[in-house]
Length: 156
Image 1: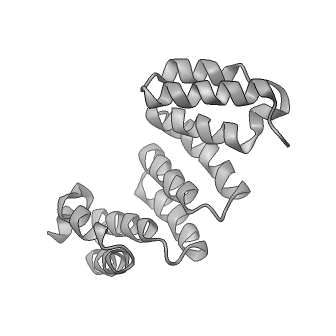
Image 2: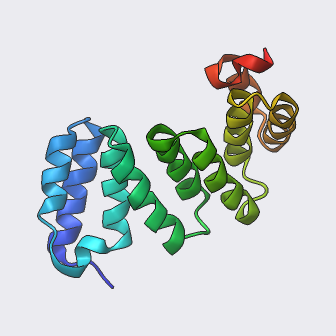
């Protein structure tokens, strides 16, 4: 479905407002989108960003779950879904989401890094080290991040 002119305009407004951390205005712009376009993937992506920015974790997790179903090839959806789920219901459920994402994206360093964080926070330190090693091997920038990420403090 090609988005209408109204939808494209309102999405543009919403993205602009988000860039300025104006989440109320971004939500208002998205609320102007009606009909089936309201459920279009680009609209849901911006809604997810608004909900994450507002720390509306239950709603963010719900929208991101839909995006994972629609676009499983997008590794970022899995990472964001797990992030929102962690804040809403905890690490155990977030870990389940990322393990599913890992099956589809075994070479995504962000998924490995986040699984390392979850394992470290859950006291599974050997598992955390293994995930962290893979993340750093896939993308060396994670080496520096690992030194300061508080989730990995049990490994320090």
